[in-house]
Image 1 (cartoon, rainbow, N blue to C red):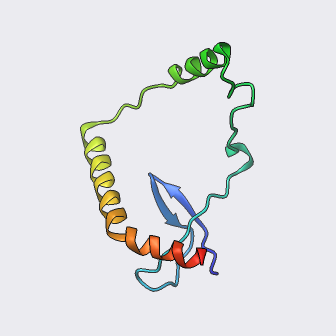
Image 2 (cartoon, rainbow, N blue to C red):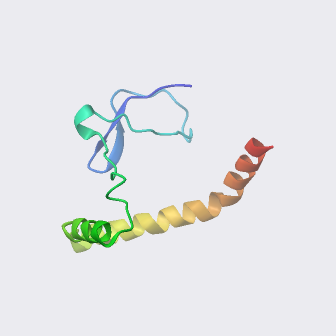
Length: 104
């Protein structure tokens, strides 16, 4: 397997150095988080179903700032969603076949 160093810039995956792979090469990308980028999940107490835990969760949820987008940003986002949906619909049979072959 070939490893490629890349980073996210303006929402796009950008290679850190030139990549010598044929056009159309499929890639699997995984994030290498910095120690300050570590993702923290909820504690067991925060995930509880008691009224207090639910209130804490709702308070955390309502504290999230709303996402503000310009009309151009929203149009690009909607176009990306449409393209992703079309890609998934067009490749779903292939992905199902690969999963079946792995499970056999």
